[in-house]
Amino acid sequence: MLKSVFVILFYQLIGEFTQKFFEFSIPGPVIGLLLLLFTLLLLKKVEFKVNILTKDLFNSAETLLDYLPLLFIPVGVGVVMHLSFLEDNLVSVLLVIILGTLLTLGITGFIMEKILTKIKSND
View: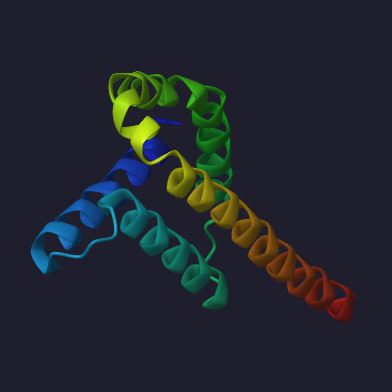
């Protein structure tokens, strides 16, 4: 598990470095996560035997997901500290939340449909 956590944190470090070096507006951890995804897809395509690493990564990710709600506590405190800003912009904030949620649901459904179609065609 320690190796896989190191891999996750290493890719986050690479993502942070890339974000700072190229001054992207995308957060570094997101860039690192995408780089990890592309690396795993490339290794799968090359048929490199990394079953042990991917199983360890999966187990570590599952463990980290158990503690994910703790990461929302600072965000909640930040929202409470800026309630006056939210009161002034309530309509626009609600509009962004609703549109973002609907867009996310639509894109997720579309991608899931494509994945399921591809899986069925491979069987």
